[in-house]
Length: 148
Image 1: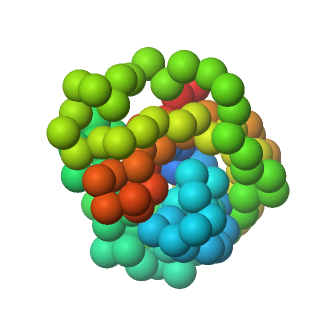
Image 2 (image 1 turned 30 degrees about the horizontal axis):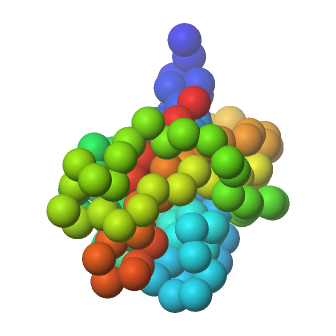
């Protein structure tokens, strides 16, 4: 697997991190507001686009098994956008009953576009990712992790 493919895969994991999926990306609203489960996915992509690592990390649920991005600089030359995001009726694989800090899990399916320079090469691609989000006891939606 080439360095370019590895870098793309790492970015997908962050967004889909929704991870993950894939090298994800998204673009703008508020994950803690009324925009709900899809809003946190869009806000995460927006934080990556803005180079705001602190904000991106704050959008992960405190008990998330996913890994928030630590080095936001690796996203500087890449633009993420969410072309479409919606909740889907599918099992997240998690039960809110098992976590004191989770009221509900939802799965968001997002079509994410990634463009820019990765390892010296131009990249322009779209991927569909499933991202598990969790509503905490304060009613805020946070990223839990991504699915492939």
